[in-house]
Image 1: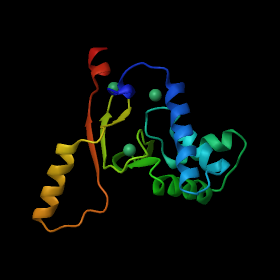
Image 2: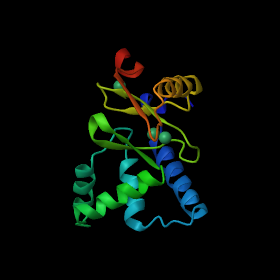
Image 3: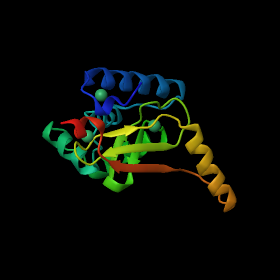
Length: 158
Ligand SMILES: [Zn+2]
Ligand SMILES: [Zn+2]
Ligand SMILES: [Zn+2]
């Protein structure tokens, strides 16, 4: 799959696939994808633009849910723990994981024009380079996120 975030596509398929995969994984792991967790995941997947906690809160409030901020934070925490979403530090926002079943580092291309984020699939050479650099420093890596900011092909051609 080559960078769907940066090409026009039927996004309803992305949302559908992400939610059914999340349900499958939660069942397999015996954890509960409660209504609020599911709705927060669906909101994170509403586009390929990273979404902040306050945007999520605003949308839930607009839908008449009026959730307390801790409820939303706990739902985000759960989704992060289950690796169904990633945190994009440079935007203080969250993005749905496009291949949540397999362990992987979060490597992202962030377009500063359209705001979309695309997860780079498991890049073995990149992961090996990071592991080698950390190994030289005798550093134990527990999590890693790489954020590359720039302009996507679609935006450069417009
Ligand atoms: Zn999509
Ligand atoms: Zn991912
Ligand atoms: Zn773009």
